[in-house]
Image (cartoon, rainbow, N blue to C red; front, side, top):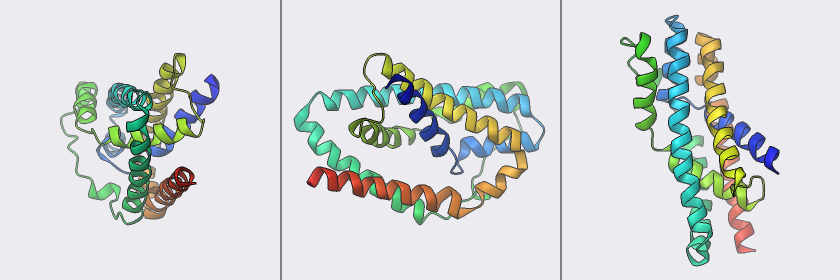
Length: 204
């Protein structure tokens, strides 16, 4: 179960980081500008922030699970949130070109910029809260004890590896980031399916 927690969190984080946003598009633009070293430090900083945000999220999730009355209502909210995220992705039209980021003052400041943009991206909290609730309730992961740290390591490492992939692919990433079917429709239908499945499971 420990190894499964690490692998599942890694895969989910890697895939979940593909849709274009300020973080991965910034790395892509740095790579295009041949500032790959700055992009690596940028990716490292953003992944560390992801580790912190995920830690807060999982602790909140554990708190909810220890309060059954709240947990029952929250599972319903989580199901609705997953369905909402699914529809949001399906009908989203954003691409890498529609995400505006500044990359002129980078160089050795890549790490600092990664920290700043990472902290300015708190939307990862509700996303991971919904995903963590689903994964643990279906026994895909275990966030108790050592599982807590392995789960966080998997999430942050998945994000870091995706950003390294973006850095390595550079401009070629735009072919993926500008494909609405791959970056929005596929994740959207997956989230929608998970939300409906989770909700039906609660009702039944």
